[in-house]
Image (cartoon, rainbow, N blue to C red; front, side, top):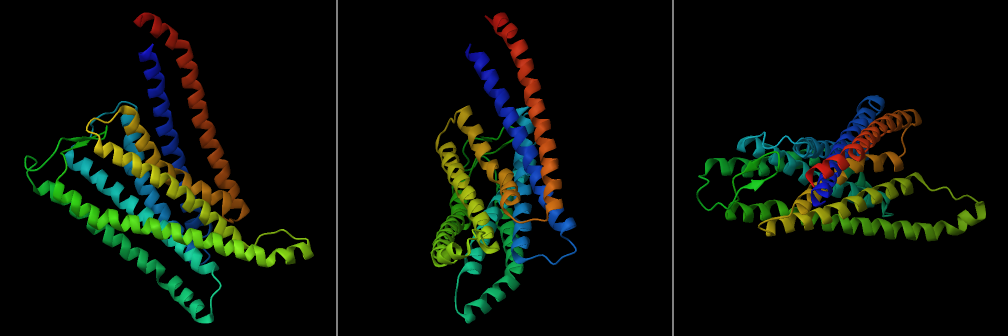
Amino acid sequence: MPKSKMYIWTLIIKLIFLSLTTTGILGNFSLFYYYLICYGECKLKTVDLIHIHLMAANTLIILSKGVPHTMAAFGLKQFLNDIQCRLLLYIVRVGRSMSIVITCFLSVFQAVTISQKESCCKDQKVKAAKYISCTLSILWVSYILIHFIFFVNPLMKSYSINMTNKRDFGHCSTAGRDGINDSLYAALVMCPEIFFSLLMAWSSGSMIVILYRHKQRVQHIRSTCGSSRTSPESRATQNILALVSTFLAFYTLSAILQGCVALLSNSSWWLVNINHVTSLCFPCFGPFILMNHYSMPSLSLVWIRNVSTLILKYVNDIIHMVSSCLVTHLPHKVSAES
């Protein structure tokens, strides 16, 4: 009986990885299609440029982490060597760092946009919007170079010196970690990520306060006019708050699980797989949060939603088919084993 339960849970993990990877690729590339093709003739707003950078970071995470883990879940184990494994880990780290930075930029930019300041601050907002794309490009280059150090440095060392046991990712494994590299990684990567997360939380709280005060000021106007429509800025702010809240929830949970995996010498199968799943949730669900809350032209939104419905229906058909096969064949397998 335990073997049959393990078989069922393994199948569920396979379907979760397949569904997350499929929907993540669909969502991110659909938004790329919208911004670069449907919306390409118009000049992109600053917030749209930030969205494109965010989708690029999410796509890197899905392609370098979601796809290999899905292949490993379906039985393709250890198909990459050490250098290829480190290269995938390098891409995941760049995408993860940039996802944190860009989400923080998005939150801070929207908080500055909706804030009611003096005219001098409005000029600062125009300058910030003008140079934010250049700033994000510099951050891309910076994180690519920083993580490249951690990609190249272990290859130049002998693995027999100051190295712990191998790290197994399912689809590949790398030689253990260096204590000096871990300290350097914490100083150059982890501390800035914690700072950006705290800044993100602060800007989100500021937006909530600003929206609440704005609602209190215009409450009597709405009651007089009898209109309850929200302004475009309020809708955009609510959209970004939903995106940031989702990011912070999944990022915090993933960080806790990743810390548990790093501290435990022999992590359980459940802990490792749940850690991988939670790290993929925001890159996969983020585009759909933008689709549901952000104002898009109706034709583009209908196209994206129709394609999304078809893909999700296809995934559900696969799940139903596999479940039917499982119900049909599992009793025979259990009886044969017993």
